[in-house]
Length: 269
Image (spheres, rainbow, N blue to C red):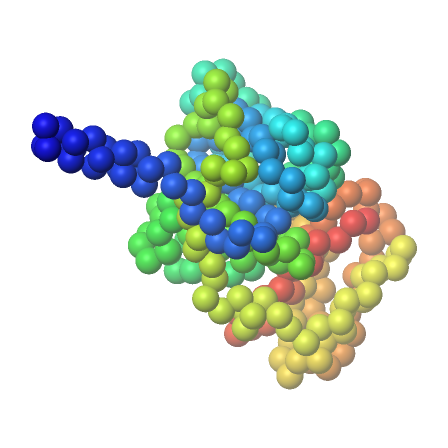
């Protein structure tokens, strides 16, 4: 009898441990969801958190549905993907789609990573583990994803990150209150992503003013991952990038020094 009770208690502890959520910041409003295989992601917002930001990363394409009683609190969703034609998850998914009640949705194809880890890819395309100290086989390390989305959503704090390798299952729903299993934050985001640069956007151009003692290479990337403009900004000078002929949408402006110091700006044109 004693052995049976001990085993029962041990089983309960094991179940509770297995289901425990990893929360990075309980007051955070940003959640990251990542995998390799893509699939069908049903994500339910079951807690009343204001101004929710969601970052989603997969190598293969995914169909994403965001619902739940507080889905209206989601203000922005950004998907970063390689955009592979998904034939792993039951049916072919040609391209990523997002269904969400209110939020602004942006889909970016292989955007540049603003935080470099030698074990991860230089573009944001996939993540399947919480490991930052070993090679990720062509995918990103989770600290790269955290750095990217914290930059994309300025002023946000990471609530949780849920990562897995296999397909998101169409028959299941992931809950905000249970989603986290990873908290890998960049160790030196401040030194790698913040620079003495002033950015001014008008209807006709982007003006980049550098206060740095080294040249700055800036590239403008559309949501398809294509470079649509580039500009070398000399030290302590201004660079001008025309935008009047560009289609309306979300763009990323990446500025980097020869020493690898980098900053990514999200722009609406």
